[in-house]
Image (cartoon, rainbow, N blue to C red; front, top):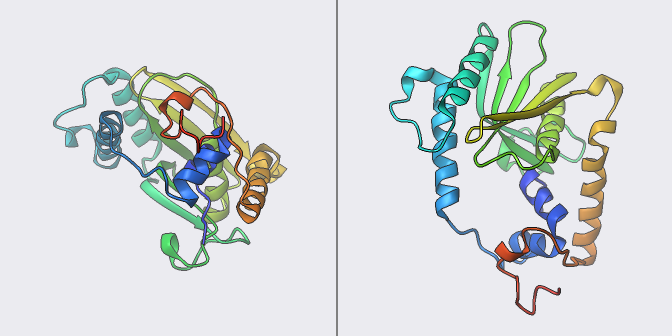
Length: 227
């Protein structure tokens, strides 16, 4: 059974045909690259420091803004003093948007996400969902984080959720806050996209969509691309 995620939903937004090739037909298998490997390393180090403190890190990856990264970690750990920090937190909901009883691999899973970090202060300050990014901040598209916020709201019952991208290479932060007590309007596009994707899967309709990432797509220039 197909399970929605921030990743496959973002791919569909970029190009339904690429989504089909990656997720449905598996024509485009996941491939390791130097960039992906570095991203994994950066995530692991930052998450270790969030979990155990800066002293736990013996070597920082080259290329990151070290002052920004350290300051962000110190501030997050201070905010969570008396509270807690959840690392690689798995959030899984069924079709009624209730947490699945058996977690990530539950057979009733409908949508799931893994948050890099969730900072939960002991005070009344709303929790913060963090997504760690490498490279430079090149847009303000917060779609993936809003998906995480939606799942965190239903999974943990937080009425207000903050979210941030940490661009650890360029030393930039982008984020916002959603007050779910006022309704689901800030995530209505997420809900509508799931409806559209469900229809596409049912009808096997995945049109190609030209975008700025086309030249890096494994379908580019092939007959199966459709462009």
